[in-house]
Length: 153
Image (spheres, rainbow, N blue to C red):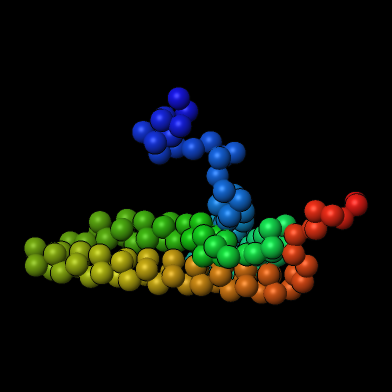
């Protein structure tokens, strides 16, 4: 019954997630917390450095435990970049103060929508790139694959 419920609602229990998704979700959420903190720090800029380091750790752990880090970096970056939506919401909030002639407000909203779309695509793209780069470096730093089943440890 749970299988049909999963298909109907699209929701799966965390234990049903693949290891790649679990690693990416945990690493990305930790990165998102640090990215949010960098924005709240008062500099009014957002640092995606945490996304790279989360990708590094997730890539190293995935390579060490499963022998490959394929598929964890981009996902970690996308989840870690979620605070970018906060900046985009701030821009939308500022755009509600547009006033003037109708043509001016319409042109302003078109510029805001174009800018938000561009910044969103570039921001999430950069975040995904940093997460993947971190995962590649982390996997490269980890020389051993998964433990051999014949090891007596």
